[in-house]
Image: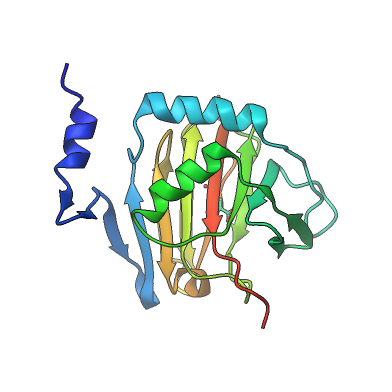
Length: 210
Ligand SMILES: O=C(O)CCC(=O)C(=O)O
């Protein structure tokens, strides 16, 4: 049987460069958002979801005002990398084979990453409040892969409040680049709909402190 997914992907390899079906969305003030709703096929995404859910070390951390973050997180990366944000200190555990495999797939599209922050949303009541990932030690390209239930990824311009929403479902890839973190915030709002569990992996480049 012909595997249409692979045929589509292969047809996008030209002169050794992988061209993907990503949409490029140019945001106000130089932000760039790349979006591919079906970057990975469903069966592979399902497999990654189960492996990552079962083998990663998850914790629920206190957020900036002392309340517990409304989701679980995990932290993996190159040896010695630590990512600090919103009052949390996240020391990277060594990469798992699955996280490395996904990293290579995303790097084939854009970016070079040495760290991955994972977010696990157990139900529609888990969420991520509005934020921008603009710590000075972090590179501007973030590769964000979603697995499991579909949630809304919403981004809003800091001043104009222009808002864009994208379904982030099983196998969706979003790459945030350009000046997006300076001018745009993003969030995963709560939903009252009965949604299942979702895992999101944000691959990042944590630069050496100057
Ligand atoms: O769960 C998501 O899709 C968003 C995660 C994210 O962007 C972040 O952790 O900064």
